[in-house]
Image (cartoon, rainbow, N blue to C red; front, side):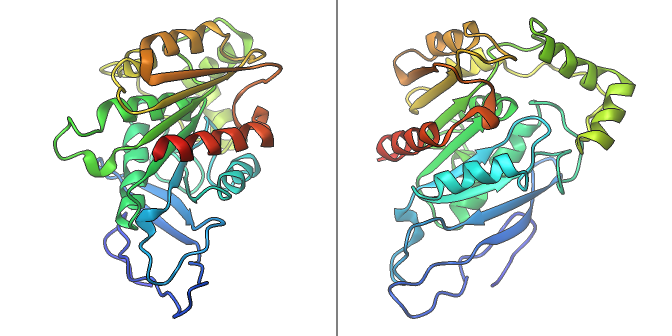
Length: 287
């Protein structure tokens, strides 16, 4: 195995001379454009690779977890295992989470973390990338798709081909539910950040956003023609159903909305059957 600078892995991984060879998982620290180290794991999934076939023929799912998650959390691993039946999977920990460096900005600078992960997936040879985000990660995949793409010179190597946003907010600073009021206490109060650091293993930045980043609903309006799937539970305790409806309305014809009966919030509430449907949707839309 050969590695280059942080965040870059060469394609010289060892592949035995066998048409049934399967590549082994890789774990690397990536470097974001603002110099933060991001812990990332690449897994080839359930696809059997021919030694002579480039990995670009296979879809890779880049999974963006929710607030206080990380690449090693059981609920994130379960999502990765489900998508591994459809292609390769790349998971990572956002800044301030798990073994990654820096501090969480709760959806702002995290777009750079996702861009670094997608860039690595493309360096590994994948030409088809599905970004799938949950809760905070759901807002990040929306902003990433709006900010990286063919119309943005120099950023296409970090662009996604299909986008799935699960349980995401439509607007910032939402405090309309008790769970979100607790999140705001964690983020904005010194005592809350202390609880988050030692109780939830999440290190949060103590500065306000300046400037305020593009909102999820504004981002959704800029994603077309990239296919977008918006998934939300009708029993989500954090963000009520007006959030996904606003996102879908902003996305227009490029967006598809699934309102899931009885579903709660994010990875914990995403059942195996739903994850299979998301995998099927991504494979079809990615072409």
